[in-house]
Amino acid sequence: MANEKQYPMTKEGKEKLEQELEYLKTVKRKEVVERIKIARGFGDLSENSEYDAAKDEQAFVESRIQMLENMIRNAVIIEEDTENPDVVSLGKSVTFIELPDGEEETYTIVGSAEADPFEGKISNDSPIAKSLLGRRVGDEVTVQTPGGEMLVKIVAVK
Image 1 (cartoon, rainbow, N blue to C red):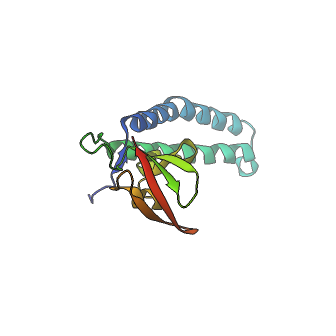
Image 2 (cartoon, one colour; image 1 turned 90 degrees about the horizontal axis):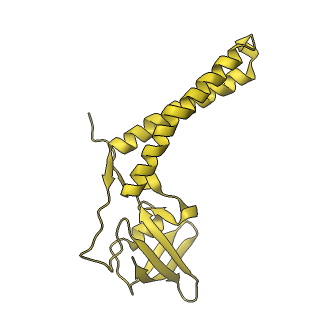
């Protein structure tokens, strides 16, 4: 078998995926099967929108279960880098300001499996993270974004 993609993530991120997987297997799967059973009772399946919707949801749930199992199986837990506390690395939060006079922004750099921009978690594959990884507090970094270049200064790493 070819090398499978590895998914870097925090211990908490892996636990969150495991909880979602458990929910899908023990609760959601049963709910969908029950919806299919009820929809079958409505008669002719060729024109039964409830049945079609339930089957579509079942396909989505099963696909998500497979994806989560693969991500968990190939998870690589991010270890805390205590030797270089001021260097931006996976699992750390980085605070920067956009130069010349931008606002301060803080993001935690995580693996793609647990990225959630609304929670301030960005993927290590994102343009911002790629530009910041390996840099230190005080560094000025040019970040390539879809909207063009921006210059930022790293003010804190935790």
